[in-house]
Length: 155
Image (cartoon, rainbow, N blue to C red; front, side, top):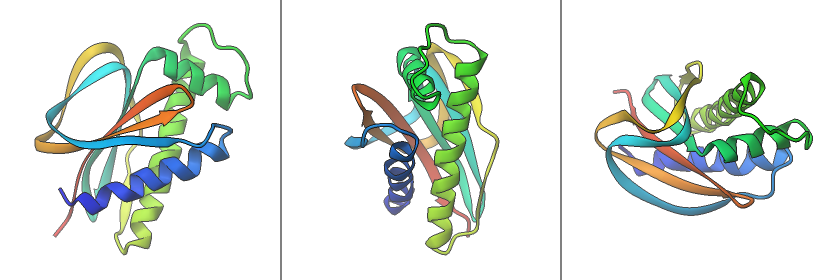
């Protein structure tokens, strides 16, 4: 995986989240992981197609997902993890990945994204790569979202 391909994802997160009313995010660290993503409770997978192939997985706790949904709904308290919260999380991931696709397009890559797929449950293993993938830890307020990225340019 080309490490330069992670910047459009981080940039999208830094641009989109404040526009939705969140505090300015902070990148904590970027590191390599091997093959599998272990869920923190809520994971959303979005694929890249055309001149890029691969996936991005947004991984967070249920509490972080409720915080995100509450913020997206202008501070309405969220006490249970129902359909409304799930819809908000899928939409946020769709917006983040669409912005990243726009960033990739500005790099000269023709990129499209797939429909976000949401999985619930802690300690669920998702294979994202046959080798290494990049994991980016992002802080949003007092919450953390891990962004796993395994993409390559099509040749």
